[in-house]
Length: 260
Image (cartoon, rainbow, N blue to C red; front, side):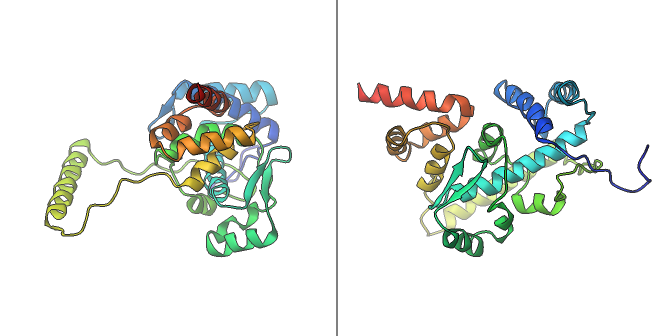
């Protein structure tokens, strides 16, 4: 039965559907099948087929796009929490660990009031979500912020009918605009008497949070890796490019190589 005209129809995602979707996305993420604004067409087709075969549910590309926004929101909010002292991830129960309620209350009050629902929120498939979205956020390619997605995504994790995409700027105009901005910035830099800003480096707290997300990485290996990564930005970028299931092995090889 079709929905009344003008009303949104939301799809309720189950854990089984999420797993069927994410296993396809992780595989194609590792193959580099991203497009400018999402995934290449064959990825959506593969995901639709896998959810249909595993769960006997028909979904659409728009359903997948909406669900990916939810995953991106989870990563945006949780990864920022994990970068703070006093937090960890409970891999058995799929939710945040925290030293105390006071630690949580201070974080929410000072850092992000929108994160309040994540204190006890269960987020399954966290390793797969990290694999897909950690590289995008490290490269500044996250499509939206957690606050933006929180406004657009319904609490029941439903999928809305598609919205029309924004008009794209013509390539020639975009290049001219970029060149003009570069010239202005360069001229301003020449005129300025203030020292140029130092290159940005990843904060140690963010590096530690990334290491804590790696399953089964013991304390000793984590500390060895932490000592190397805070001194070498290039090594940290290389780590974040790897899928989650390869990061532990790579770090152990790195530690073993440097100890010889």
